[in-house]
Length: 100
View 1 (cartoon, rainbow, N blue to C red):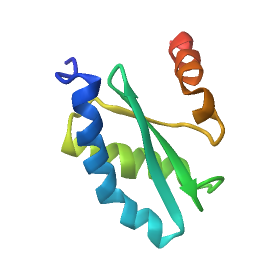
View 2 (cartoon, rainbow, N blue to C red; view 1 turned 90 degrees about the horizontal axis):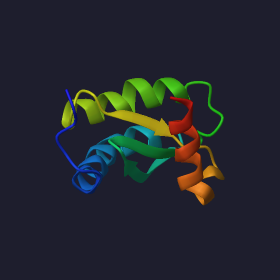
View 3 (cartoon, rainbow, N blue to C red; view 1 turned 180 degrees about the vertical axis):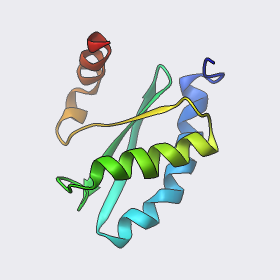
View 4 (cartoon, rainbow, N blue to C red; view 1 turned 60 degrees about the vertical axis):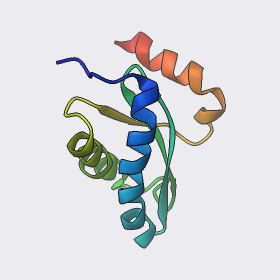
């Protein structure tokens, strides 16, 4: 089932959903930043103590993505953008899309 929202409509909704997760991450010294929404994919950047944490993949999948899917749409995907890749975000996104 296609996602019935435009990227522009998804951004503020994803932002609200992520704001609900931020306090949980902050308890462990982590943070999260919403970078963009492109083609129905939510691009975030885990920051602070989340960088290099062995549990960050689980946090992304079972925390962030789960919450966004509950709040917005069950087929949304969330991708973490590594530190530094946000400087060339469009190129990073194209490289991921070319892998499909």
